[in-house]
Length: 492
Ligand SMILES: [Zn+2]
Image 1: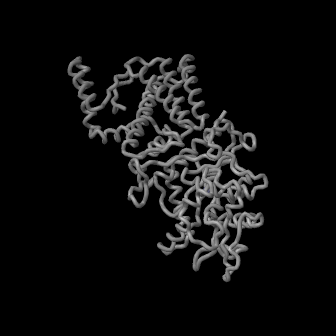
Image 2: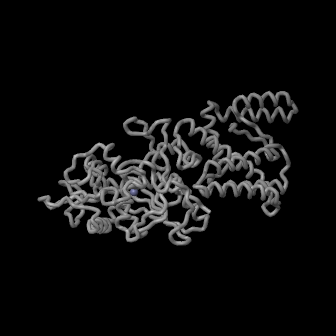
Image 3: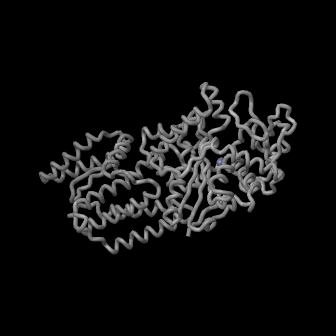
């Protein structure tokens, strides 16, 4: 049984889909006017896991993430670059897709764009006007009218964010706008300015406000109600609050999204990442220096409702953690590849041990996607495996069977998060190289020492061999003498 923390109720609720066996998910996507940075992909890494987990639980999932391809920022960028807004948005959608592909996540089922939903948006707004939840700035001589949502006509305004309109009004910097009845009313339709991109509507040429797009796209794709609406915590107010006001006002049942899930922000070396601080790191630049799994690890090891720290330290911890898992995968592989698969002897006791660990992991995932406790169990399984196999011993069919069971277990865990998808031996070298760089050692120097140690060991000069091992230990290098040969790795 899955429980989800619903921002709307501020409690963890049992998950019940609208239609048995099916789940609809809508996540607010990027405004496509620039490259995305490392802070922009947390939700996508997380919802990739959510989707996979729901499918594991037997649901058929339909997952949409939108592109905001009409917006002030896009129009400004187009003017700056002397391009059309659609040239700008199409270009950045393609760039987004490249970054998304590099992260090796599953594709969304849909990526709706605002410009593809103009008729639905216009109908939605007309509906709100009819229901007296929205009003036009009538009497403008040019015939170009704005349409605003009237928050005073939606009694539940503030229920998601827990902010009361009265409190908001006193705290807000009030924009002078004589067209609005209440300063907190928000634009559904903005009348066209000279030379700006616009669409026809009953209120003259114009374009939609930001909030209405998600409401209209959800209705257009899924109908009045969806199961899960996701977004960053920074979108809760006003964006999601406004989506609720629009959609519930328009819906015949008065319902919109059953579960609201918000992921927390990324703390950038203890502060916020922003253009003004000059500390923006684009996703693709991060991926030039680090593997995508490093990023996914950083995003998934903290709980999604906690902040994720981004710093040199947390990158190092992620590399180190991944290397620990990959090193055990490489070890397992080196063991079971020694024995013909048909000869593996699966151990019942180990099977039960892994099953018990898996049950704990399932329980953690089912408790609002509790990744931190699940990773703790994973580490314990890795630790126990290493403790058993990091000794020189002849490979037996039983050992091979166990190594194979372990390997499958780790792969299964990783599969839900798009982690542990690389070839262990090859990727471990890449990870170790990063750790070596941090330690200031060269791979070749270590190879020389390890070879020298093997040579003196063969000559039975154990005192010298121990001395070299000590030297390597001081360099944070661990040498294992396994039945399959000696190998070294950076201590994790
Ligand atoms: Zn949205």
